[in-house]
Image 1 (tube, rainbow over the protein chains, first blue to last red):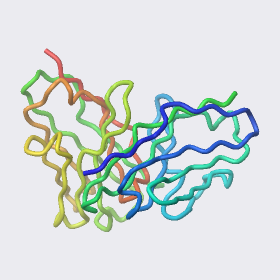
Image 2 (image 1 turned 180 degrees about the horizontal axis):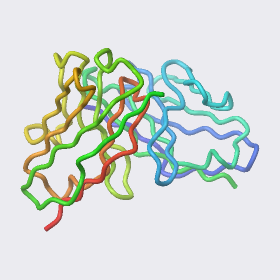
Image 3 (image 1 turned 90 degrees about the vertical axis):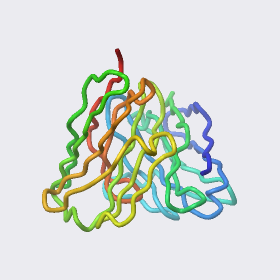
Image 4 (image 1 turned 30 degrees about the vertical axis):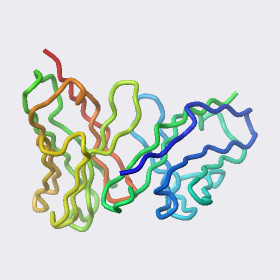
Amino acid sequence: SSELTQDPAVSVALGQTVRITCQGDSLRSYYASWYQQKPGQAPVLVIYGKNNRPSGIPDRFSGSSSGNTASLTITGAQAEDEADYYCNSRDSSGNRVVFGGGTKLTVL
Amino acid sequence: EVQLVESGGGLVKPGGSLRLSCAASGFTFSSYSMNWVRQAPGKGLEWVSSISSSSSYIYYADSVKGRFTISRDNAKNSLYLQMNSLRAEDTAVYYCARDYPFDPWGQGTLVTVSS
Protein backbone atom coordinates (compact mmCIF):
# COMPACT_ATOMS: atom_id res chain seq x y z
CA SER A 1 0.00 0.00 0.00
CA SER A 2 1.01 3.65 -0.15
CA GLU A 3 0.47 6.74 1.90
CA LEU A 4 -0.85 10.20 1.08
CA THR A 5 0.49 13.23 2.94
CA GLN A 6 -1.44 16.45 3.56
CA ASP A 7 -0.62 19.57 5.55
CA PRO A 8 -2.63 19.40 8.80
CA ALA A 9 -3.90 22.97 8.60
CA VAL A 10 -4.15 25.82 6.13
CA SER A 11 -5.74 29.24 6.40
CA VAL A 12 -7.00 31.70 3.82
CA ALA A 13 -8.47 35.19 3.93
CA LEU A 14 -12.06 35.51 2.83
CA GLY A 15 -12.24 35.89 -0.95
CA GLN A 16 -8.64 34.83 -1.53
CA THR A 17 -7.28 31.73 -3.24
CA VAL A 18 -5.97 28.72 -1.36
CA ARG A 19 -4.27 25.53 -2.51
CA ILE A 20 -4.40 22.31 -0.50
CA THR A 21 -1.89 19.65 -1.51
CA CYS A 22 -1.65 15.89 -1.28
CA GLN A 23 1.56 13.95 -1.91
CA GLY A 24 2.14 10.29 -2.51
CA ASP A 25 3.68 7.78 -4.87
CA SER A 26 0.30 6.42 -5.94
CA LEU A 27 -0.52 9.83 -7.41
CA ARG A 28 1.97 9.16 -10.19
CA SER A 29 -0.43 6.46 -11.43
CA TYR A 30 -3.86 7.48 -10.15
CA TYR A 31 -5.77 10.72 -9.89
CA ALA A 32 -6.70 11.98 -6.47
CA SER A 33 -10.25 12.60 -5.38
CA TRP A 34 -11.06 15.31 -2.84
CA TYR A 35 -13.70 15.32 -0.10
CA GLN A 36 -15.02 18.12 2.09
CA GLN A 37 -16.18 17.31 5.59
CA LYS A 38 -17.86 19.81 7.88
CA PRO A 39 -18.21 19.14 11.62
CA GLY A 40 -20.74 16.45 12.41
CA GLN A 41 -21.41 15.71 8.75
CA ALA A 42 -20.47 12.99 6.30
CA PRO A 43 -17.80 13.74 3.71
CA VAL A 44 -18.85 15.14 0.33
CA LEU A 45 -17.00 14.56 -2.93
CA VAL A 46 -15.86 17.88 -4.42
CA ILE A 47 -13.27 16.96 -7.08
CA TYR A 48 -12.44 13.73 -8.93
CA GLY A 49 -10.46 12.62 -11.94
CA LYS A 50 -8.35 15.10 -13.84
CA ASN A 51 -10.49 18.05 -12.70
CA ASN A 52 -14.15 17.11 -12.43
CA ARG A 53 -16.79 18.53 -10.12
CA PRO A 54 -19.91 16.60 -9.14
CA SER A 55 -23.21 18.30 -9.71
CA GLY A 56 -23.82 21.03 -7.15
CA ILE A 57 -20.18 21.75 -6.33
CA PRO A 58 -19.30 25.42 -6.99
CA ASP A 59 -16.84 26.14 -9.78
CA ARG A 60 -14.49 27.89 -7.36
CA PHE A 61 -13.27 24.35 -6.55
CA SER A 62 -10.72 22.91 -8.97
CA GLY A 63 -8.13 20.19 -9.04
CA SER A 64 -4.75 19.62 -10.62
CA SER A 65 -1.91 17.16 -10.50
CA SER A 66 1.81 17.07 -11.20
CA GLY A 67 4.11 14.15 -10.54
CA ASN A 68 3.40 12.80 -7.07
CA THR A 69 1.40 15.83 -5.95
CA ALA A 70 -2.30 16.57 -6.33
CA SER A 71 -3.79 19.93 -5.47
CA LEU A 72 -7.22 21.24 -4.61
CA THR A 73 -7.61 24.95 -5.28
CA ILE A 74 -10.41 27.14 -3.98
CA THR A 75 -10.53 30.41 -5.90
CA GLY A 76 -12.32 33.07 -3.88
CA ALA A 77 -12.76 31.14 -0.65
CA GLN A 78 -16.06 31.62 1.16
CA ALA A 79 -16.87 31.28 4.84
CA GLU A 80 -18.83 28.10 4.09
CA ASP A 81 -15.69 26.48 2.67
CA GLU A 82 -14.22 26.21 6.17
CA ALA A 83 -13.97 22.44 6.66
CA ASP A 84 -11.66 19.45 6.67
CA TYR A 85 -10.48 18.33 3.26
CA TYR A 86 -9.29 14.82 2.47
CA CYS A 87 -7.63 13.43 -0.61
CA ASN A 88 -7.69 9.78 -1.61
CA SER A 89 -6.55 7.59 -4.44
CA ARG A 90 -6.11 3.96 -5.40
CA ASP A 91 -3.01 2.45 -3.86
CA SER A 92 -0.15 1.00 -5.91
CA SER A 93 -2.01 -2.31 -6.36
CA GLY A 94 -4.98 -0.50 -7.84
CA ASN A 95 -7.33 -2.51 -5.65
CA ARG A 96 -7.21 -0.74 -2.32
CA VAL A 97 -7.82 2.88 -1.41
CA VAL A 98 -5.71 5.25 0.65
CA PHE A 99 -6.66 8.54 2.28
CA GLY A 100 -4.54 11.50 3.20
CA GLY A 101 -4.55 12.59 6.83
CA GLY A 102 -6.75 15.59 6.07
CA THR A 103 -6.27 19.36 6.00
CA LYS A 104 -8.26 21.69 8.24
CA LEU A 105 -9.07 24.82 6.26
CA THR A 106 -9.75 28.01 8.20
CA VAL A 107 -11.28 30.98 6.38
CA LEU A 108 -10.24 34.19 8.12
CA GLU B 1 -32.78 10.99 -4.50
CA VAL B 2 -29.75 8.78 -3.95
CA GLN B 3 -29.63 7.78 -0.30
CA LEU B 4 -27.50 5.53 1.90
CA VAL B 5 -28.56 4.80 5.46
CA GLU B 6 -26.30 2.90 7.85
CA SER B 7 -27.51 1.06 10.92
CA GLY B 8 -26.31 -1.51 13.42
CA GLY B 9 -23.77 0.48 15.38
CA GLY B 10 -23.57 0.44 19.14
CA LEU B 11 -21.51 -0.42 22.19
CA VAL B 12 -19.71 -3.76 22.17
CA LYS B 13 -17.06 -5.32 24.39
CA PRO B 14 -13.55 -6.08 23.11
CA GLY B 15 -13.57 -9.41 21.33
CA GLY B 16 -17.24 -9.05 20.47
CA SER B 17 -19.04 -8.91 17.14
CA LEU B 18 -21.33 -6.50 15.37
CA ARG B 19 -23.02 -6.42 11.98
CA LEU B 20 -23.49 -3.12 10.19
CA SER B 21 -26.03 -2.59 7.43
CA CYS B 22 -26.33 0.05 4.74
CA ALA B 23 -29.68 0.46 2.98
CA ALA B 24 -29.47 2.00 -0.47
CA SER B 25 -32.20 3.75 -2.42
CA GLY B 26 -32.61 6.04 -5.39
CA PHE B 27 -30.24 4.21 -7.74
CA THR B 28 -29.63 0.79 -9.28
CA PHE B 29 -27.72 -0.72 -6.37
CA SER B 30 -26.65 -3.83 -8.29
CA SER B 31 -24.70 -1.72 -10.80
CA TYR B 32 -22.28 -0.13 -8.36
CA SER B 33 -19.37 -1.18 -6.21
CA MET B 34 -19.76 -0.25 -2.56
CA ASN B 35 -17.41 0.62 0.26
CA TRP B 36 -17.01 1.01 4.00
CA VAL B 37 -14.94 3.88 5.38
CA ARG B 38 -14.43 4.66 9.07
CA GLN B 39 -13.42 7.65 11.13
CA ALA B 40 -12.17 7.32 14.68
CA PRO B 41 -13.20 10.15 17.03
CA GLY B 42 -11.29 13.30 16.14
CA LYS B 43 -9.26 11.46 13.49
CA GLY B 44 -9.14 11.21 9.71
CA LEU B 45 -10.85 8.92 7.25
CA GLU B 46 -9.71 5.32 6.84
CA TRP B 47 -10.81 3.06 4.02
CA VAL B 48 -12.00 -0.30 5.39
CA SER B 49 -13.31 -2.47 2.56
CA SER B 50 -14.75 -2.54 -0.96
CA ILE B 51 -16.98 -4.97 -2.81
CA SER B 52 -17.71 -5.04 -6.53
CA SER B 53 -21.23 -4.91 -7.93
CA SER B 54 -21.57 -8.69 -8.22
CA SER B 55 -19.45 -9.50 -5.16
CA SER B 56 -16.75 -10.97 -7.39
CA TYR B 57 -14.03 -8.70 -6.03
CA ILE B 58 -13.56 -7.93 -2.36
CA TYR B 59 -10.72 -6.01 -0.72
CA TYR B 60 -9.86 -5.13 2.85
CA ALA B 61 -7.52 -2.81 4.67
CA ASP B 62 -4.75 -4.68 6.47
CA SER B 63 -6.07 -3.38 9.78
CA VAL B 64 -9.32 -5.39 9.45
CA LYS B 65 -8.39 -8.30 7.19
CA GLY B 66 -9.33 -11.62 8.75
CA ARG B 67 -11.71 -9.99 11.24
CA PHE B 68 -14.21 -8.09 9.07
CA THR B 69 -16.33 -9.44 6.20
CA ILE B 70 -18.06 -7.27 3.64
CA SER B 71 -21.08 -8.58 1.76
CA ARG B 72 -24.09 -7.36 -0.15
CA ASP B 73 -27.59 -8.46 -1.10
CA ASN B 74 -28.54 -6.86 -4.40
CA ALA B 75 -32.11 -8.12 -4.09
CA LYS B 76 -32.46 -6.17 -0.86
CA ASN B 77 -30.38 -3.16 -1.96
CA SER B 78 -28.22 -3.65 1.08
CA LEU B 79 -24.55 -3.66 2.03
CA TYR B 80 -23.20 -5.31 5.17
CA LEU B 81 -20.09 -5.36 7.31
CA GLN B 82 -19.67 -8.25 9.72
CA MET B 83 -17.14 -7.21 12.36
CA ASN B 84 -15.63 -9.90 14.60
CA SER B 85 -12.89 -9.86 17.22
CA LEU B 86 -13.47 -6.16 17.75
CA ARG B 87 -10.76 -4.06 19.37
CA ALA B 88 -10.76 -0.66 21.05
CA GLU B 89 -9.06 0.78 17.98
CA ASP B 90 -12.07 -0.18 15.86
CA THR B 91 -14.09 2.50 17.65
CA ALA B 92 -15.23 4.86 14.91
CA VAL B 93 -18.08 6.18 12.85
CA TYR B 94 -18.56 3.77 9.98
CA TYR B 95 -19.75 5.17 6.67
CA CYS B 96 -20.91 3.35 3.58
CA ALA B 97 -20.17 5.02 0.27
CA ARG B 98 -21.06 4.26 -3.32
CA ASP B 99 -18.62 3.51 -6.13
CA TYR B 100 -15.18 5.08 -6.63
CA PRO B 101 -14.66 7.92 -6.14
CA PHE B 102 -16.87 7.67 -3.09
CA ASP B 103 -20.15 9.43 -3.82
CA PRO B 104 -22.44 9.72 -2.02
CA TRP B 105 -21.82 8.77 1.61
CA GLY B 106 -24.28 7.73 4.24
CA GLN B 107 -24.62 9.63 7.52
CA GLY B 108 -22.59 7.03 9.41
CA THR B 109 -23.16 4.76 12.38
CA LEU B 110 -21.07 4.86 15.55
CA VAL B 111 -19.33 1.74 16.79
CA THR B 112 -17.84 1.90 20.27
CA VAL B 113 -15.66 -0.95 21.49
CA SER B 114 -15.19 -0.70 25.22
CA SER B 115 -15.45 -2.82 28.33
